[in-house]
Image (cartoon, rainbow, N blue to C red; front, top):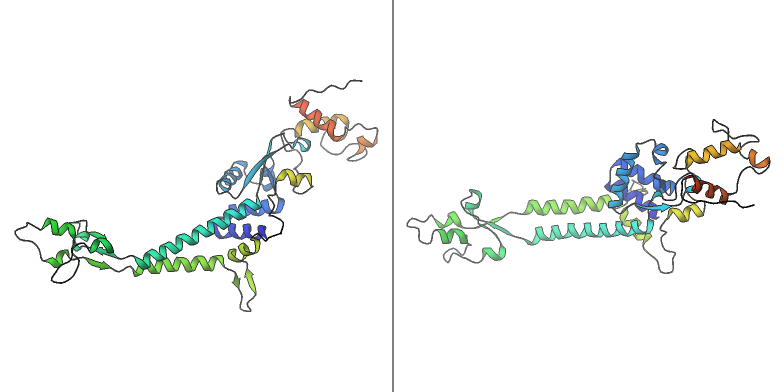
Length: 303
């Protein structure tokens, strides 16, 4: 359900390139920084720029993982979605969005704005809220007068007619209608959509947030860490030939006869060298060899 919420939110608020990248991360669980370009057939620079944007949006994170055994480095960057964190980010942002829209509607309903005729002609700065407008009242008409104009014309030999600086209430129906329309549009966009037979055509963010809400006694939403997924055999496999130590590993396998010079499995198939006398080291020996090759560890075999 968390995956459905994240996917739906991406489609509601982000561009197509972001949506595609979110879908890949949900499907493959993570992306290696050093093989995502050939995997997705897109420039690495463009992918990193989009992922860094999503990281700033707190929808994506990265973890440094020891991927030496698969041809990477000891600090390979893995991009992934922390389901638990992202769900909380979405919930907070939807709440803040609703608060902002409600405040705008309340402000449009409750606020009154008074302008002096001289404000439009730029002869004064007479713009007041309801409280400030009541400071000077014409005793004859009971209408509000512009304070600035009253002071300016107090000692004037030929003051203009009071109607020229009597405050007028500005109609804010346009602002109110705009605020109500924004509320309605957001409510429709974030709610489920039904067809003519009342069958759901799409899931709504409001409904999905209710479904992923923490239930007492239920398992917490997973953080989806790449290191944990790799240990459980979950996630995409590295593309052959990619990674910092891929070339070193390939040369060693060619030397041992595990693969031929063109990268195809050697004598006896993919495990031929192993079947012919144990020419292939175990996983621990492979890691030691790769660390030696990149200058990170020196190991000696003593007979």
